[in-house]
Each structure stands twice: as C-alpha cells, then as structure tokens.
Length: 266
Image (cartoon, rainbow, N blue to C red; front, side):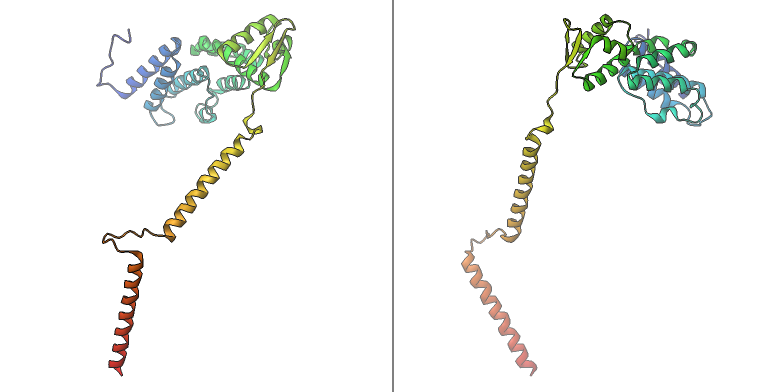
C-alpha cells in the first residue's frame, strides 16, 4: 500500500514527521533496518525543536530508533538516553541496551520480563525478541576472545542457555554466519577457538615503518638538492662557465662605477 501511494508534497511538517515514523515502523517489521533507522532519524529531526512540545512523539520515535539500531548491530549513543524530558521514560530501554552491549543473556531476559507490559504497550516487544540472537553473538565473541578451548556446557552456562545441545546449535550457527572463528569438537563436546595471527608480533610493522621513513628521507634529500642546486638551464643556451665570467665582468663594472662616483664627490 505504501509503495502504491505517494505522500503529498504540500503537507504540514508535523504530519510528514508522523508519516516517517509509521514508515519506520513498517520497515522495521519487514527486517529493513537501515531504511527504518533512516526514516526514524528523519522523523526526529522533523519533530518540533522545543523540549516540551510533542514529547509523546519524540519518545515513541526514540524508543523505536534505539531498538532498530540494536538490531543493526550498533549501540545507541549514551546521550540518547540523557535528555532531561525523556530520561526517566527511557530507563528500561537503557537497561536493555546495556544487556545487549555486554552480551548478558540472563540480564536481557530479566529486563524483558520485568518491562514486558511496557514493551507491549509501546509495540516493540516483537522487535525486542529478535535481539536475543544479537545478545548471544556478543557473548560468543567475548568467549571466543577469552578462551582457546572451552566445553559446550560452560558455554551454555555463560550464555544462560539450558543445555549443551542448545549451545552447540547456537555456536554452529555463529560459526556459519562468520560471527566467530572456531570449530566444534563433538567428541569432546568443546569449542576450539582458532588463534588469530597477531600482525604486531611479526616484523611487518617494522618493515612498513622503515619504508615510510626511507620515503620521507628521500623526499627531504630531494628538497635539499632542489634548493642547493637550482636549475642551471638557460633559455639563451648560455654555458655555466660563460655565465660566471659574465657575472664577474658585471661586478667589476659596478665596482668601477662606484669608484668614479667617489672621485667625483672628492
């Protein structure tokens, strides 16, 4: 329906802001998070600048924008939750953001259950439920960086999953999606992280630095040569030796003229 209709060009600014909010909601449900986030940011920019005007609209748009940004894999800026007029009402969403940022699935479940009625009222519960895998991915990244080898049961415990089989399924999906670089040993029921090559332990940084220093030194030497030895070419084709002789004669003529002027003064 949205694609088949066009919003009129002559419309009130408030009506267009509301239209952008609705489009952002539709795009978020359709998994088009980038477009949704763009529309929501436009809606907030179109909102009245006065702090105490259209608070309900700003609150709805901000809540949805926070969830969409989390679904995109980003973390909303802290200043988003610090607006004086919206700070208290955004507190549940701030706690949810903290749970997603730290990859704590237990905290995420706790916040979701605690504020479930609010999320239903805001019509964001469906989107929030989609964040569960994002929380798990963040937790898996931390585990992958911290452990070279860990049992699937310990992974399940750290992520707040029920069984090792659940952890195996989640880890397998994360490996396929490229979230972590690891392998699953089903015989030993463990997760083995592949050690990443640390470039800074090799000689490559030293070689790159040496190359840049050599380039800078060569540039310096070329600049010094250009200043010390100017271009000797002459449009008249004058030989350097002839030019020096001419300059000596010119200097001699100047000295002679000065002597004549001195004699005249005497």
